[in-house]
Length: 267
View: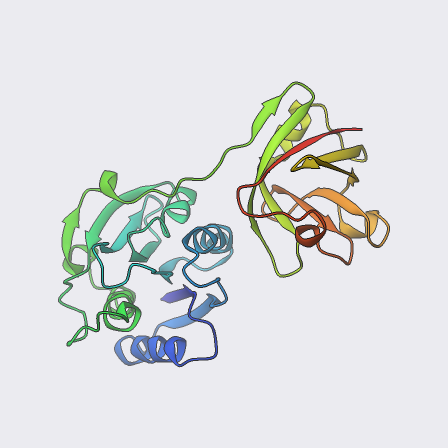
């Protein structure tokens, strides 16, 4: 059985190693794959998007995710079975798991694991990754039934994650910044179909209007299709539209922030 692990714990402290130690101690036969621990701290939305994008390329199994700014508060911890019947998500009920659940057909069963019989005692108020989520993930990886993980809860009551939505307008697409990567590439909430619907075609010159400032670029397939330092609009590996500057940073040069609205149109 595989366990994947995503968090905002970083690599400087012992948090990731301790959780992996709990997994190894309780489910020694499980193989653990680290998706990333570089999610910006407390950034639930970035964690949810990365989880959704990465899991289709991970083996089916138990998917542990911890980005938990409300740890110790009123939010629940949950384990969620997906409709494909091969994947179970474990983590805080703060929206972190829901995009991934939707990618795999939606949630069909959920359990509140906050008081799971598998948790480690005494439970720390600030490290549920170690004391609740990792032990639950380990038990599920051993083959324990989901229903035994805690108290059942209605899937309709799971906390959703709200995202902005691109808006097709006459001759233009209003898109929004979802997140950026370490290269300064900016991922938007539109798709290739959205661009086609407003008349943008591969190879077109594009005007990108951000906060009243207009920038010229090209709708291209990849970074090398434009000159070094030039702006491009492209479809990323997840089939989302994105902005980049070849060997530069679109995030910095366009001075963008999360949820900023951009207009994309032909020049």
